Image (cartoon, rainbow, N blue to C red; front, side, top):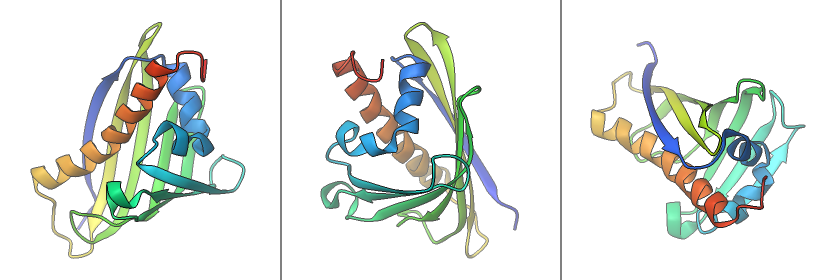
Length: 158
């Protein structure tokens, strides 16, 4: 069966430039997403091929590991695409899983985050709309944490 796609977008009350700086500075995530991400390891220079290993807080996500490989990191268009190499999924056994986030300015201090998740289940089935929503909401919950941090700390990542 061919991979399936789910997309969504959310408004963000910070500038695209500040949000993009956090996306590029993965070492800041344990501070910016305190209580959700405990630690980050990086293998590579930040460009395509770089591996990010995020250790999630046991209270937030059963202490799992989220490991990705950067496929595209385009600062001109604010596009970040990653192949998910390892994740404990609550929605099923994923054969493949990738994400693409595109940030677009909507004003001087606002932007929209557009997310596309491509996935394929090991058994070839499709996720229910509720399961797809769980995946998207998981990514956007981290985005909301970043947004809240940036609003509370206006001088950081300026």
